[in-house]
Length: 279
Image (cartoon, rainbow, N blue to C red; front, side, top):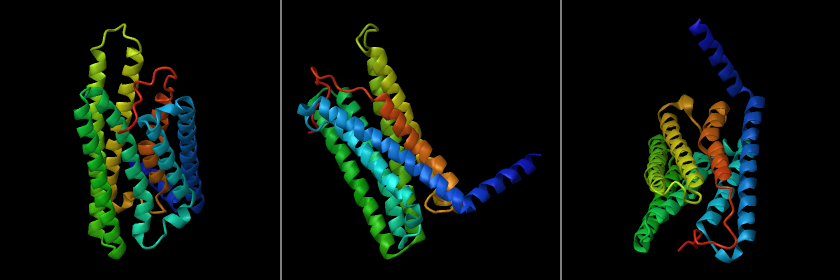
């Protein structure tokens, strides 16, 4: 019985993967989902800008604007999936699929930056962390660009494998960052008096965002490693639409939608002390 069920599921999975109609339907669904999240992020950015235009460039504003960019690029990539997945050289496909993932990493490290600012009240410690985070992002993009350039010149399967392992390492570092700084802020808030204004709501916010982001980056790490060592689990081919749907829903669309919902509160007009301009 188990073998028969497995065979039926396997046939169903294969039929969907090989069906042009299913491919188009799934990839256009991803396009619509990303476009919706992108629109929400842009609307939130505009609302914040209209609410506190005098604050200048804040972490909150940059976070929402980068969310808009990441999801918009993904929407375009999946909207034109027929052209994207067959581009040559293959390095172009990897750029279209990996670059938004790197931007997603940079976007959500802004939350870690904000939490680090809350944890480290001494300004020089926060500035050191800000510089360190900037260097980590710069190094990440530099290494990834080098991998893309090499693959453009020589489509080497070993270098492509190294590139996927690199994405997995970046993902696990992001997961650890959320666990460390999100956890520290959560336990810091728990030490506040129970009757402190907004304590319970802030605890829920920090705890929820930490769990969501830690989980999504951990899943990304696992799935990218699986894709690197198992060609049947490849995420950068046209005939794996079901796997792409599951992957991108779990690691980007649902986490982004949940975080945008949790962080939907606008900064107060009268007191903007917690929304400092980025150095």
